[in-house]
Image 1 (cartoon, rainbow, N blue to C red):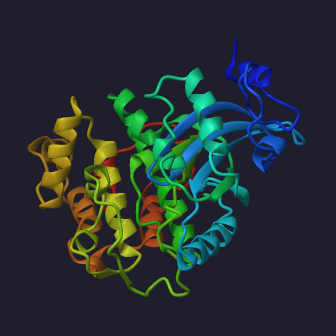
Image 2 (image 1 turned 180 degrees about the vertical axis):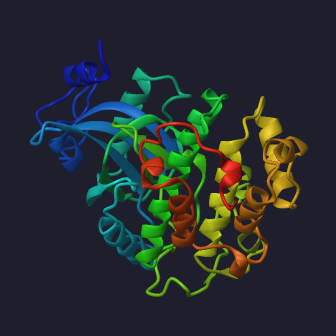
Length: 351
């Protein structure tokens, strides 16, 4: 029996999940449950949890992200601004945002709903404790974001599962990521948290950048303006892709995304046996050290220079996204950034 079938057996007339032997605790109509049938749990992170759900009117599946809404007014205003900005990011290589709304269920209501979901899945798959704040006394608001549904596996999973990589696939993936970053920067936005786990594959296998960190400030009218970043996550997995200026807590501009692109390209070009090996190698990369086998594989100096440019500790030295795309197109042509037939030689990047 699917999750949707089990869920329908437990629904009351208001589309709330209730236990068969339990009376409804409170009367509350959730906009999410009125308009969508939850199908599956997709994942969770620092900024919320994501479900796959089917829109009852459109009869189409979407990804629905639920984020605990900030309690402070200034944080609320910031999140609202960011959601409005994300709605403008319509690009082939960015996860499309369709709609967003806020819900404020009665105290305890969401916790009861989450308990029912957790009964159907192991705790390792679904745990909303951090999102629902079950120990808190006050009423909590939740931000729901309706997004394009992508494949469940991210680029991070693809890297783990694909050890022997065709260079044409690497170029296609990297080129599409860079195109998405170029568009983000053209809208005076900085992603600030580019990493494989935030990059997805659409249902037709195109690259999609997602997870824009809605609880962090990332919007400014001028893409050249520097940011003072004191609240960025300090998790190891994120720090591996963060620029030196971000880690030092210094002001920065959109070139932080270029540094992250450099790390992602390096990881695309190198497969690792263990996660500890990956972490160790990426930490050494931040110190300017490339592994010996990288030099043996890519003997041409221009290819090494290209990598070092994006990973330069000096932000202004790094190429911008438009320049990177121009180089890729000049050397390999537009087709390589889409389907990429045939083999290409990364060593010829600048040669």
